[in-house]
Image (tube, rainbow, N blue to C red; front, side, top):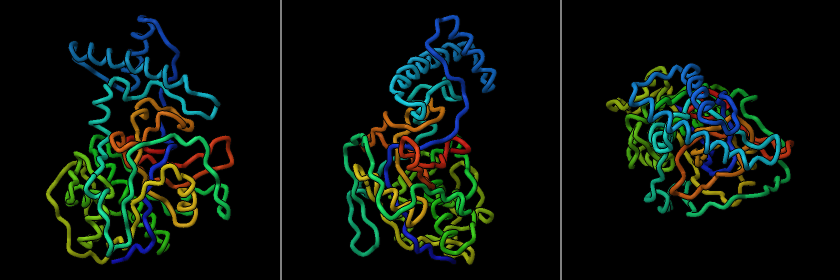
Length: 329
């Protein structure tokens, strides 16, 4: 069994990138909307009953209106772009329910553990940061993928366990950084077994997960020994595993409005976990997200891993591996 002695940093941020490759559109008339909807169905292989077709088309129409409003905020070619994605026939509530299941455990957030190397300090209101100062003494950009410590990007599909994916994948990275070997660990073990208010594919909170892992001295088994099923199943966790990984310490903090601290954490310690508001990702095509980033507790709904940053462009960009909805960032 290995101990991950490097600290896992849990942070919140305003800019993450991931992949979706749909079609960008301007505001169409009804006939054009129907044509777009038909093309959307063909592209994403969508098939509906007659009654469902009408519901999905109404959702699609609303998506087009939202896309238009979101794109009004673009002030630079590097700003986020929004358009039709495979989720454009879903209502906002459906998108949240199916794909955004990170929930903040308020009991864990407000607790303070004097005997462990971690703490919780979350704020209730999200303010948009307009400028981030680059700390001195760190590289202008960093990408931990280049170091070979980032594992494969898993697709959570409709299992709302982003909290588990992001935590396990960051543990993989920190173990690789310390020991020089990248080993895939079991997300399914966490989905099946994590207590402390976590609910498997129905949602959870990574701060609560890390607290549970710490208190119970949980050993993450190799993925090969506890494979991913993407559904809730009976817990088969072992008391120990010779090839497993155990988290020794972590912090669980909100760095709003001190996002510059994230850069130092990434540069000096490694990848971090982040809780974000991902509602607009339903329509995201690419670019840097600057707006629509409300990070209040009520609107935190997704968990991701951040693997780098780049301060050489017009905007400070964070390199993110989106852990659930898509395959790459």
